[in-house]
Structures are given as structure tokens and as C-alpha cells.
Length: 205
Image (tube, rainbow, N blue to C red):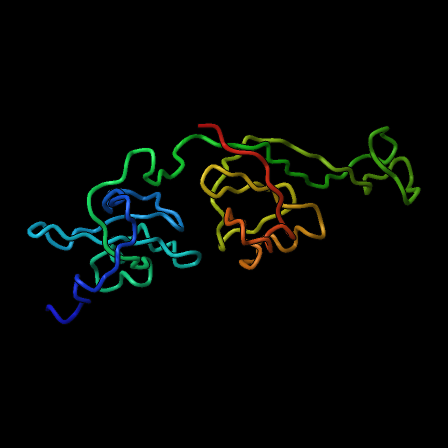
């Protein structure tokens, strides 16, 4: 009904340069701070701009039930204002779609014969004992994903915000990499994340 949404005439412009790309139900890669437009009517032409909310709400931005125009849109998208026309292609938000990987090192402790040269024996156990242990590490190419509150991060893990990579610091700072408070950010005004993460270059185009 007309009273269920604010009158268009009182919605201030959000993007003076034009409207971002329209929301696309087929997309599944919307990230926090991504901008989309939503057409309220074609005649007269009226569109508004929405921004994908930050974590944890950004996980809803790719779900149809929370799409702009739905009853639940406010949980995933923030209404910024109205817009007219279209943004130039170079100005439109473009989520990263390339392939980004890093060398993830995984180590385990394996029992070994205490007399072997590469088998540490700090307890001076008998040479015939197999109670000594050594660290076995493997390196695999691992995809660089966006930070997630459902993941458990350890030192050396890499995440991204757009194409900017961030590496989890060494222990004990790595203990904070899983905390939302220390979630990496590209916002120059946000610096708390530096207590747990360091910048690690950018992903390839």
C-alpha cells in the first residue's frame, strides 16, 4: 500500500552521479558495502539505492527472501536514498571475480623412531622408542575467501575484502583473527583489525 513505504519525494539522492547496477537475483557474490539500485516504478522512473549491510547481516544479501523490495530487505540492505540515470561503468561497484589463492601450510605431529636424525628426542628416550614426534608440514594452494564469522582462523591464513588481501598475524595475535571486532576492513578510519591482521597485497585481476 502507498503508506507502507516512504514517499519518494522525501527520499534524498544517494548517488548524485547516477544509479549503480540493479539488484540481480541470479548473483550470489554480493559482499558488505556493495551498492545496488532497485526500481520502484518505471513510469514515472523512480529508483533507490541500497547498500549491503556489514557482517553478520551481509550473509543475507545473496538470499532472495531478503532482496530489495521484500518485507525482510532491512535485515540485509540499507536504504541510502534515490538515484537517477546510471553510473559510468568505471564507477560501478565491481565485486572481485578473479582467482585468488595463497600457500596454506598445515602441520601435524607424527610419531617417529627416536634414533632417526630428523626425529627430535628432547626427553632422551631410548633409540628404539617410537614415542618421539616430529612435525610434518604440507603446503597447498588455498582459495582466498572473504572473512567469515563461521570460520576458525590460524596464523598465516589469508582473507580478502574485495581484492585486498589480509594475513592473520602470528601467535598470540592470531587468537583474535576469528573475532568479529578484528574483522579486516578497507575503511581508512578502521584500525582495530591491525591487532590481528596485516595487509598482504592484492589479488590478481
